[in-house]
Image (cartoon, rainbow, N blue to C red; front, side, top):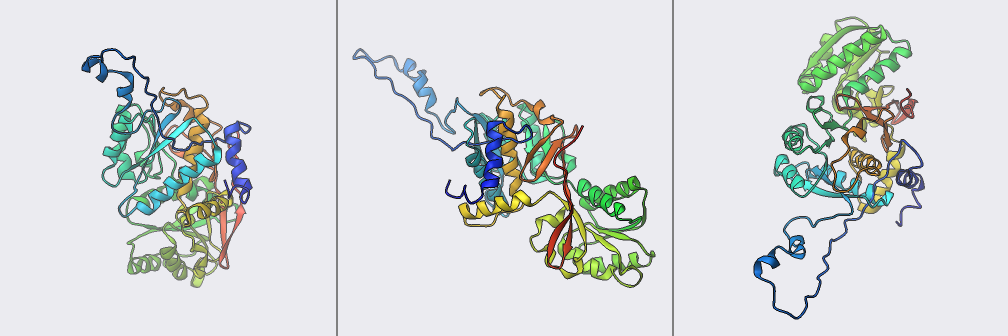
Amino acid sequence: MADATKHTQLFRVARRFGRGLTPTFVAAAAGLLAACSTVVPRAPVAAPPPRAAAASPIDDEVQAGIPRDVQRNRVALLVPLSGGNAGVGQSIANATMLALLDTQNQSVRVTNYDTAAGAAVAARRAIADGAQLILGPLLADDVRAVAPVARAARVPVLSFSNDAGVAGGGTYLMGYAPVQSIGRVVSYASGRGVTSFAGLVPNGLYGQRASTAFLRAVESTGGQVVSLQTFARTPAGVTAATARLAGQGAYGAVLIADGGATAAQAAAQVKRGANSGTHILGTELWNSESGIAARPPLSGAWYASVSDTLYRQFANKYRTRFGATPYRLSSLGYDAVLLTVRIARDWRVGSPFPEARLRDADGFSGIDGAFRFGRDGIAERALEVKEIRGGTTAVVSPAPAGFGR
């Protein structure tokens, strides 16, 4: 590729998967090749009866849908390619294409299916076309629709959702789980001497899970939660919650479990009076916002996320090829293909996907660093802690390279 030499480190990472030189890395590659049929000329004798002609192997290959591919394993990518979420869906699809091209593997074929018109419909189409593994969908509701269809066909699902409620029963989650980022940043704050914590969490399912994760994380460090306030996702709701929090006394750190705009508003109100020196803690949501470091009230804040080291190289390569900036979640598509092809080295074409290999205790590695699936089907990730400093971010606690046993 023309841009391979410009971004050699990312390219070498991908190529190492295919050659199998690194046990924790994988490779995946394949162009979408057109299938062809060879017509055998008939001898100059009477034509065979119509019924025999209709049953011939040649005619059997000429049919509606995806042409048969007997040399590669069939994998389906289910993402929104139209509608309101088409941008992120197309970005993920482009990332899977880059993974296939970068690794130059010839054992996997990925076909895209649009979930915008119905995720269950897309899953049925993919399975009818011969897919033995599904990558995606993106949204939790779509995963709920796809899971029973895939389970009935015994086809595993590698979803890009982070909703723990949809994991299990052959469905795996590659999304960034809030419980892990909260646990990591609380542990880091505790190591820096913080013993008293407060929290601001939004109403709704995400807030409920963030609250549970926060309370457990603080308890595990021996710290104390002074106050935990919920809020409606409106400016007035945030102001009311921070006012209630202010009446609870002093605390060393406050978790704001929401996006950058809400966190910046809350941080400006929290850091007043007795709590002017409190540390602001964020969640994995911040890593998906390119402008998070440009919000002055968040200067000095800590948050945990996957590493951006390889992602920056991937993003440059993506822009060169597609002329656009990728969505941050697109790395999930790239890494899902890398994982697939590593396993595909022992996956006989035409046979079911070897699902047991997904639970490798040593895990996998890719653009977002090391990860592995637990018994619950949720990806456990090696996370780093970042600090926002005057318009940029700095890594203050690097992510582990892997999972020691």
